[in-house]
Length: 104
Length: 104
DNA sequence: CGTGTAAGGAATTCTGACACG
DNA sequence: CGTGTAAGGAATTCTGACACG
Image (cartoon, rainbow over all chains, first blue to last red; front, side, top):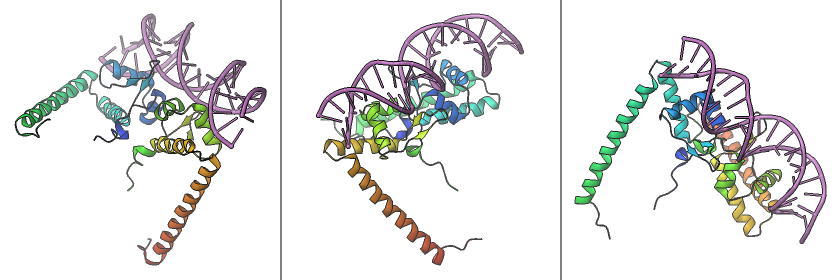
């Protein structure tokens, strides 16, 4: 029923290419991961793999950093967004449980 | 006026990842390029970079090869398609020249 | 805190070639 | 023709650390 997860979220880009795409040094990219601002996948031998979404996210982070926003603050914003997402999902789940299509 | 060329055509994937994605060996992938069936970009130091379109194209090639279609035949099909595309563009250009929006 | 850099090792990619068929 | 493989070299990526501030 699902079609492919759209190319935007497929984790296939190496850190070198991400560096070119974003203009960020690999050091910075790894640091933002260390701070849990970004979450690449790992290949079999531990190489980081990023999606286009990750690239966009990194450019957003770069903009915020330039404005003087600290990684801690960026992380905080992210956490808040995640909570909202979780809440949305929960409510959606409850609605489905009461009024949704019957599961077989 | 243009927005980004869509992620589908951005050449950012290394041959190793393409190999995983398609199930083809790197040898095969390079061979199909040698036969002009696929056209990756090159990074600064000569590393091949593929797009998701290329990955799809490779899977299509793989299917045809399994059916016994030779690379030569696949190449021929491609050439025909390209000719049609060129013709389309030409006609479109002529229509524009006669009835299109005036250029400043 | 955020980022640069040198360090050493492991994995990647490249090309040209030989092999088989 | 289509694909495998061994070969040698160059570039990539990884981690942990020291540096500065």
